[in-house]
Image (cartoon, rainbow, N blue to C red):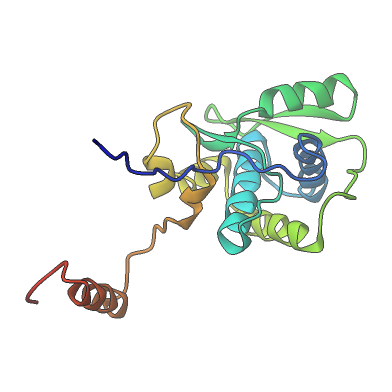
Length: 195
């Protein structure tokens, strides 16, 4: 008799009050908060959402929007972003302004035409979003995209799901103290010998 190992399920989506409307409202919120940013477009919008959701999940196991993400060439993005943006535009809640920065760099800037409904969001949710906005504020779309190409993004192929547990991966090298602590634990468990 062969025993199958139990594989833990990874989190692709988290059910939260407001469901898909959470993404719509965050698009409006971020677009309003970034209306004075020198550079703001769809690339940066996707990365702000990703950073807020994944930082929130890493800190408290609850993302901000709870929506499913995918790996794209320019970095992670919500899987349903295009239909959400199309829906918001069709309803007149958002419009897009094309800005040409020269050298082939054209930005699609989302402009919110209505205020977001934030009734389903906590102060903590909004703090993660505001922190992500601040983090990317001075970056260009290309810099924002490059920043999102860390170990979590590199672990997936294009169009693959970006599990929320990827938020636990770090792009920072471990310190010598962390390495020593890991080796000590491995030795204690009999998994390594010697130095």
